[in-house]
Structures are given as structure tokens and as C-alpha cells.
Image (tube, rainbow, N blue to C red):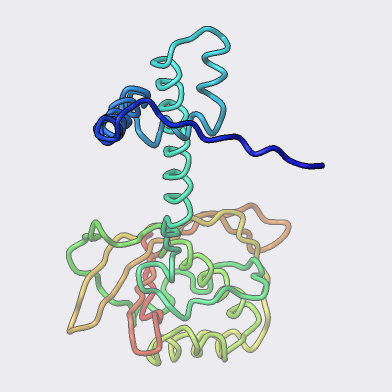
Length: 258
């Protein structure tokens, strides 16, 4: 098909007037664009995010104004920021340190398992090696609860060792002087085993002192013990003195409070 070409018409406006009209139109274009540009919201990127989430459109559809939509968006952002901060605080929170060994107590390992037994030494036993306590005082930063827990485990373990005559275990947790006294008691017993039941055992740190450069902790043990199945339970009350050495805490002496 043959296409028709439109004929060019000669403009009525003189060339000089056309040249003046072009700058006028160009100058008017920025002004019109500025007038057509919407008024910038003070929320800036937040308003854009609100539009992206559809909150602004939803608020407008429900008949709410732009101010309420902005307020809703700010509230949601605040909740989200709080959730993120709380998550980070939980994630990077340092775990609570666990008790290493009762204020420095080490080598006090629980028996596998503990067997109930009577106090190893009755009145008069090992009194010669008992270490006298200095001025009774326990520092405020000393972990008494942790020390008492481990000391009770050692108490029960040594009672079982004394009942069965386990000299290796007795030697492990006592000073040489204390072990010699215990060994003497075992010889007097004639190597006979014994069995008793500890019905109640309580412990309390009563003194923490330093004597001749050596730290000594005194722990009081008391409770109920039954030596024979047909006999009634009896009370016991004694203080153990534990000295810290290079090998850990060792029992240096036992004294009866009665």
C-alpha cells in the first residue's frame, strides 16, 4: 500500500519568536515539575518502607490519615528493633560460670559410688594430729556452700574406706601424720571390717585461716549414725581440719566437739 506523506506547513510564527518561545518552555518545565512533585514526608525512608509493606495503602483504604499510618509504622519498627536487641543480648550473654571446685578445692573426687558408713574416728582418735584453729572467721568471698558440698562427699568416702580398711584411699586424702594415726587405729582393730549407717549428715565451714603460710579450712560435721542394725541411732559431732597442699586439700586433723 502506498503511504501518504504529510505536507509540511510553513509556521506563521517568525523565526525570532520561535527562538524566544523555546527557552520559555524550557524554563517552565522545571517549575511545572517542582509543582507536580509531591511534598516530601519527614519520615523519609520509613514512609517508603511503610508503602512497601502496604501499611500506608491499608490505612488510607480504612479511612485513616497519613499521620496515623506513619505512627503505626513507627510502632512496628520499634517492636521489631526491641525483638532484635533482645535476641542479640540472649545470644551473646556470657554463661554463668560454674563452680570449679568449691573456692579452689581440687582433687576431692566423689566415690563411685559413695557407700554409707559411720564416722571413721570416734572420740579420742587422731586428736594428737588435730590442727588447732586460729581466730574463727570465714571471708565473705569464700564459697562455703560449694566447699561444704565437696567436703561431705569426701567425708562419706573416707568413712567407707575406714570401714573396709582401704589404706590406699585413706592415704590419698590425708597428710602423712594423719594417715599414721589412722593406720594405728586400723591395726588395733585387727583388720576387721565394720559397717555402719549414716542416717543424717550436715556440714558447715567454721573457720578459714592461714598458719605458717598454709591455708587451713575447718569444717564441722554432725548428724546421726547407727553402728549396729539392732541399735538406736547416735549423734556425732566433730571438726575436720583440711590443709591445702600442692596435691590439693588433705585432712590434717580431726577433733571431737563433745
